[in-house]
Length: 412
Image (cartoon, rainbow, N blue to C red; front, side, top):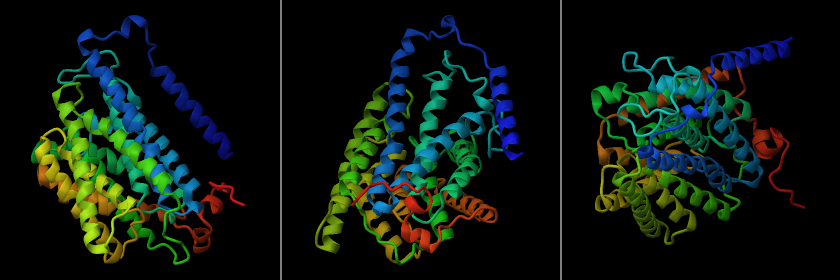
């Protein structure tokens, strides 16, 4: 009976979508020649940001046991799919359509209706459908970053349901507050060029809430990565994609885009150097993972400011970001009591908070409070209906086998 209900619901949704859709014609598809440069650039940036999600799977997976590699890939894949569908059905409309008391948008563009693909809206540089697509890529990578804090403890089904709810109750409001004419845009004049608040602080705080809720990993779980080459490849994909992440956030192929791409190279280079210096002072050596982490800290720190600062200040933002994130990671590992498995808050949270402060201090506290409280509340409610935490035995065996019955490596 349940299968019949699901099938009927699916057919109903499918019929509704086809009923409200209007076929495209070649006559409608043209846009003005003057806009083709911007449209081409943002399409490229969409592809660049898209590749960051698979990149984060390799980056995270390499830092965990080999028994968790398939689980990392599966969880990343499912949150990419969930965020894409959620954003298309309702998320974009809630973030960028209308405004209700500064908190959330409305449903005027639910199912992506009334979104033009061949008209440049007033005040924009690209068709709205392209803007929706670009913002979808941001939603996908934000959810992917969340996973790193609670890896090897949260069950696949639980994280899938959590992300589906979180995408509507947390991510869409955050995007509306900062970019969609909501609370921060109306009252705080928040400067967040490419998502320091919406993406990194939100993701890091959400991940921290999950890590606090599910608790520490079992002592039987080895906390050492199995493949540094995989970590490096994943990081390279992230840095490569970040050029579109920051470079496309002005929605135009212009001088601001050039500046944003330039500082997206400069700041992480500075972060790499400062992390290495601090690590050498305290540990007596640096490491490949330390260099990568420092560069990632610089990338996170420059994100809110990429369209506003020149190369000189970008060096300072990167240098301070790398050092601060090193201390942030050490604090989270040794003193916080939270098992932030892959240093999500230590790097993304601390780095983005510093970047926001370096750009403008407003909204940091509100973002952290809302994302933590809402995310913890969602996972707490979800735990009353779905088993969230892997058992100690499942955790020790590894989610690849205990949940997916699919090892990443066939080693003899």
